[in-house]
Amino acid sequence: MPRRTCPLQPGPRILSPGTWLFAALAALSPACAGGEGRGDAASTAAPGPTGTDSTGADSTGTAGSTEPDTTGDDPPTSSSSSSTSEGVDDPPLVCDPLTTCGVQCVDLMTDAANCGKCGVSCVIPRATAACAAGQCALGECDDGWFDCDEDPNTGCEQQLAPGQMCGLVCKPDKAEACNLFDDNCDGQCDEGALPGCRVGVHRCSSPTLGHFYTIDAAEAMSGDFTPEFLNFYYLYSAPGAGLVPFYRCLKGDGRRFYTTSGTCENAATLEGPLGHIATDPQCGAVPLFRLYGAGDHFYTTSEAERDNAVAMYGYQYEAVAGYVWTGP
Image 1 (cartoon, helix red, strand yellow):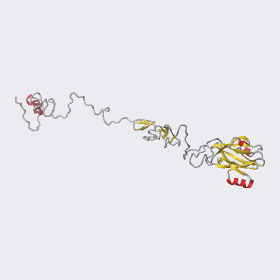
Image 2 (cartoon, helix red, strand yellow):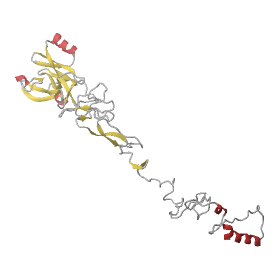
Image 3 (cartoon, helix red, strand yellow):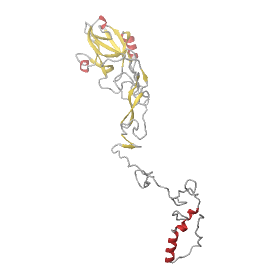
Image 4 (spheres, one colour):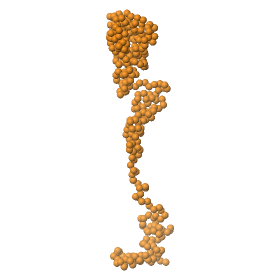
């Protein structure tokens, strides 16, 4: 049967209410729809082989529609949902009393990856890194390596054999210790009158007992002794590397001499150590010259006095008894 078509309508015109109602009913009429209840102009297109019209729309839909076909699909999710919308910021990270570094809460005083400031990571050569009071510090040295200079910037810089000890290293800000070493790199050793480090030796003389040396000022002024020099030179009060005892020896005639021999050279009675003397000129030590004449042992740190004693008073120069210090 030939298809019937509705006549073309003229251009837009204003309809009365009754006319508008009549036109609306006519549009619903099967006679103008081309059959099967189709209600718009797109129904004039020939159906496709699969039941779709030439626009590709389903035969039950409206041709040229931009609305998505949601048949059988889940309903669309509202873009206002905070659980799926993009660009919604997470709640701010609250770290008080710690510090926010990126997405972490850290303690800038102890965190080796953020030491003193976010992003400052401590790296210590040949050691594990640590952070102490916001400053990079050395944790533990790798096996066989040691921190001998106490400087975290150099890490564990010394490789030592089992049982081997670190050598001393000076640093400008290092405190002096009683160790016969220039700890603060100022060219001096154990300076500053460190308590208990060195002891002063007083020199006195007697017309009957000759020269006498003691660390006791009262003893230096006892009997008929007359002090010549208080703190004439200094010895170490305790033993140390390169030091040996300097013994005080009493002879049968009441006079004394001083030696590094623990047996008083088999010539006198041992009274004990006066202090500890160096065997070489370390740490600013100077030689202590030993002379002998007319039963009297004489000791001086002055070359001029030594030479004068030989030239003017008949002393014989024997040897350097050891090395002593001229200050505490």
